Length: 118
Ligand SMILES: [Fe+2]
Image (cartoon, rainbow, N blue to C red; front, side, top):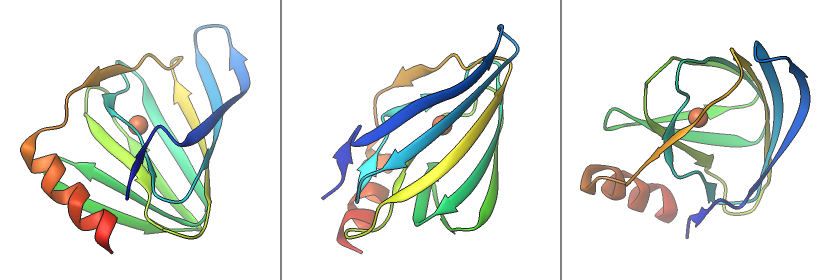
C-alpha cells in the first residue's frame, strides 16, 4: 500500500535563490502528493532502488542508476515502487524549489492502485 509522504528530504546545498540540491530517501512504497516545481527545472540522479512517476496520466518506472528531468509547471506524483527496498535520489533544482500541491485525479488514483499492487 502506497504511503503518502513516507520519504525524507535533506537540503544539502542552497545557492541563494538560484539553486537547491536535495537528497530524498524513499521508504518502501512511499509517494509524494501531486505537485509541480513552480518555475524550477529539476535534474534528478536516481541512485538507488526503483522509482515511479505518474505524469500526464502515464506511469513511468525507473531503476537506478538513471537520470530524470523535471520541467516547470508539470504536475506529477513520484514514489518508490518497491514494497521491500528503500530508494534514493539526488535532485538539483534551478532556480530554488517552489512546490505547488494538487489533489489526485481519478486517473491518478487508478494508476496508483496498479503501483501499490505490483
Ligand atoms: Fe517532483
